[in-house]
Structure formats: C-alpha cells, structure tokens
Image (cartoon, rainbow, N blue to C red; front, side, top):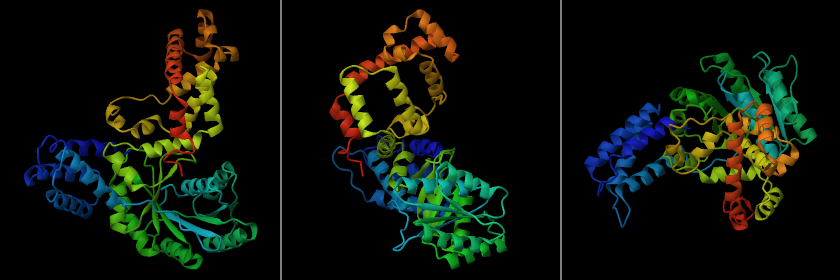
Length: 442
C-alpha cells in the first residue's frame, strides 16, 4: 500500500535529517522533493500546492526543543498534515432514526460496486445488523446473478424483480425490508459514465425518490486523479455522503486517497484491501498517514488478530505453552489464523520499520500452503509428538507433500525453535495483546 509514495517521501525527508535547525533553505529543498513525490503519486496539483504551503508555513514557525531533531519534527508535521488532508477522523455510516437505513451505492462500470455491497453487508452483519441487498443493476449481464451469488455466500437475502425499473425495484425492496425486519437496505445501482446523461438522470431520480441516508461513490484507487475527477462529477449530481476506495491493496500511487477529501469535501468511509468478502476496512486517516510515512499501523494489526483469535482458544494455547505442549496441530491452527488475517506483506507493513526492511525482499505467499501440506502429511500422533519424526517418517512426509527431506528437516527445526520461543511467553504478554483489557479493544 503506497509503497512508491512512501519510498519517495523517505528520500525527500533525508535532506533535513542531521540538520541542527530548520531553515528556509533546507526546508525548501526537502519540500521540493515532497512536492515531486506527491505529484508523481497523482495527487491533485492544487491539493499538493496547498499541502506544501501549509507545511512550509508551520515548519518555519516551529522551535526545535530538547532532544527533538529537525527531521523528526518534520515527519511529525507532515504526518499531521496528511491526516488533516484525508479527513482527520474516521467517518461512520449514518444510521436512520427509524429503520431501515438506506444506503445507495453508485460508481463507474468495473469499479467494484457489487463486490463492495456484499462486503459492506457482511461487515454490518458481523455487527449484529440485518442487511438486505438490492439488485438494481438491470443492464450489466449477470449483475443480478453475481449479487445473488455473493449474498448466498454470506447467508443474506437479495431482493430482485424481473422486468422492472430500478426505482420500482428499490421502492419494493424498502417495503420488503420493513415487513421482514431488515434494518439496512443496500442498493446496488448500475455502473455508468458521467457523460451518459440518461443513466446519470436515472440514478439522480433514484436518489431523489429513495432519499437514502448514505450515497456512497465507489471508485478504483488505482485510477488515481481520474477517480477524484469522477467523484466530483458524481457529487455534483448526487450530493455524495462518502467515498469508497477499492483495490487499495494493489500498486496504488496514493493520489485518490490524498486528494478526494480535499476536492469533493466528502470523507473516505471504507477501503477495499482484497478480493475476499471480509477484505473491507473502515478508513482511518491517521493510520493511513502512519503507513505512508513508514511508521506502521500496530492498532489495525492487533484488531485483525482480535477478529481471528477466540479468547477461550487463546487461553487454551497459553496453558499448552506453559506446559510446553505446543504441537504441530497447534502450529497448523496458528498458521491458518495468520492466513485469514490477509496478505503477509500487508501484515508486515503494519509493523513499524518493517515495511522499509522488507521493501526489496520477495515474500512467497505460497510458502504457507507448502508448510500446510507437510504438516497435513504427518500422522496425528506425529503432529502431537514431533519426537517420533525419524528419518523414514520424514521421507514419507516429503513424498506425501511434494517436498524434499531437506524442506521437512527445515520445518521441524523451525518448529523446535518456535517451541523454545513460545515457551518463554508469559500469560501476561498474551493477555495484554488479545485479552479483554487490551488498550485497543473496543
């Protein structure tokens, strides 16, 4: 996420590190590089200019105190300005005083609207809500079938109607929701081009009649500045309440995320970080700013862990560790939990300093699958008691998993090292990270 921008900003800030004080000369050189980095990331020109002017004005008025270095002060200042640029605080979904809450989703063709609708519904379902998905894209072939398939995968109903106009479908869906106790209605509209007046008028009429509590514009973060311009055009017709950026896990330059709030005045509410139905995150400006500057995002990392780790299971694991009973079965379970948390590179990028350290390192995401195959090739008694793994057994495991004996030996050695490390973990450390008293638990 934002790898290119992060690297360029790091190079820019090197110009002021080691300086004894902030001067107009050294700050000018650093900010010239920051300006180039932002423009290369496809950040809006006017947004970039104001950002640089604001940082320069505030930096020249700062006094360096105590042991704080000018470089550290500049990083803090740029971090704070990035946060302000992206909206300062997380923006939540509006909730209707009287159910159902109606959320209308709009955007260009191929931006990921339908997938986002299912992700949002899944997120709300996990929070105890009762969403209803509404198929109003009657133009794209198989769009309704796609939404039905996604709805079925998360066990949520999808309202559709043959040979009907989008407005009629949406109105009947709202009545259906009221009748059957669905407290959120998520309306998936057809993708359209802003130059298509007929289609834009259709979605404008839909908004006017439905009076949704949220009008969310979904755009592909990889399109950069084009996404910002399109969001502005949609906002002029629909009065958006928020923006969703998809494909933020790809090679995103960052222009859309850094420009869209300043240009449209509307907050980014969610970001898509993968293809899976749970790969949707609320947008936290402060956390994104920290990641852009290579400062990590420990809070999100721990939240992801908390979502996957059951407290009772964690307590059982602690007890096993105390008694030195950590087995290959436990190892397999923990590995699967990590896989559920998302891309390994993304997870490492949330650890402060790790993103820089791993920048030129190739991470093999398939390594988990190879390790899993080796463990599954073991017999149950071998997983529970690795001391049984003699030479002939290791050969059998290698043959069964398509690996070499050296691969199996390496896995067993790594497992033994992990056993030693985890034996030293105390109950307090695990409780602090995952327990109910965790400072980040909400």
